[in-house]
Figure 1: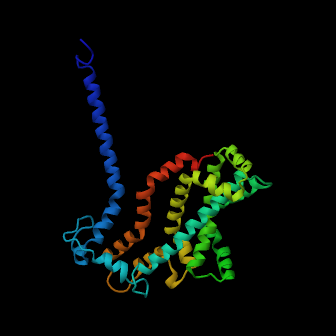
Figure 2: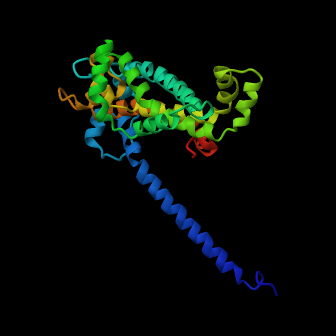
Figure 3: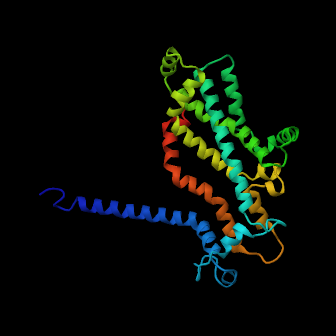
Length: 296
């Protein structure tokens, strides 16, 4: 009689199944605990103000309504301006798109030059840029403010584009430099023999190879710039504020009735772009990391 027929293996398999079930149960509990704030936000945003006053915080809406979402987008009071999040949302879009594109392209060029076109002092320059990755936001506020004033960009969306582009260069250069280090020098040398120059090699050979790193950099920069609050409140005023500053002003408004459903809807609207980016491109982000975007 075999071990399986005698029933010796069955208790072991049953024990593994029980342990696996307990593991999944614990993971589900942690997941629910982690998602509870989001569930409360969505549920509250779909309730009327009367229902919020009479129901509990975690109860589901009895009658789903999107009035709070419509008000948060178009007519909620942002300080003294009752324009909703729409104009400030567009400010963030106008700020994020060029900032991400410019900082990504400049970081790719920097990483390419520092690895495949070696020059005297390249390691020192890279070390200084790497040091820039660890400089806190607060340290650069005063120098940035003086520079924006000198260029006449203070208090504008264009000034914020410049700030995020400059501050993001250290990170984008680090990503691309570490990727290009792993690319064989023979590919660049072969292109040089064929007569290709600096920019031809970059745009025709190396940039198409670095698609995983581009995805990692774009996701990183988009998330950091969209969610930024400190630079937004320090370097913009009034109608040029990004959506994060406008959200803070909506929540901090103390006049009239406190509309928690509108606050929750506004917070979700402000967070939707980064959430969508991770949902759509999250798997490419992981692939980019494993392909060597932060290796070395």
